[in-house]
Length: 223
Image 1 (tube, rainbow, N blue to C red):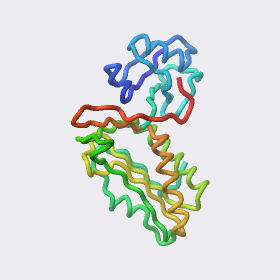
Image 2 (image 1 turned 180 degrees about the vertical axis):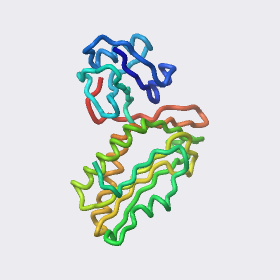
Image 3 (image 1 turned 90 degrees about the vertical axis):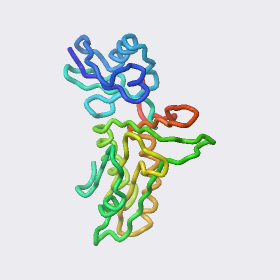
Image 4 (image 1 turned 135 degrees about the vertical axis):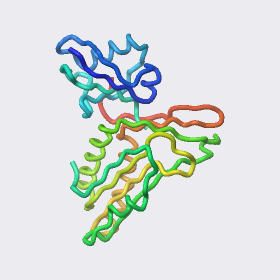
């Protein structure tokens, strides 16, 4: 059987390709596929998360012909009003904030993050973000659902840049609205931390002295 394989961030650079087709015996697991890919491309996939058909998966999951297997390095449900954006263009802060305005929801709170320089005494030229857009949408919806279970909030808006983000430019927007301000103010920090941990977004830091992938984290089963 054949499966489609997607590489991201450091894995993509190490493999030299962004995607490939892999021949596997029927009934092969994600772990078995990863072992074949390690041999074929000289990769080290230990500690990576995986997704099958845009859903996080375990290494033991059995693959089927036509599946899409994504190899995810450690990373740096919802209401109809929610808004989730992954874009390689500038984030329109005014428009994103406007999505939180509603007559019945008097409190709005949001966070924006931008590229800074210097960082750790390094002069930063730019950040280069790479994402797995389809899985980002899945994770964003789940984050919104979890946030509503924890806090008395309504609308959730999450937007993230990809590509080159220069110093002073905004790379992420996370906002919520609620009937009262306290719930909104409490929900935003939780969403920011959860998004940083779980969104499949990777950050290459390009400084005057060189470049490096910013160390990431994992939030599920790994290879």
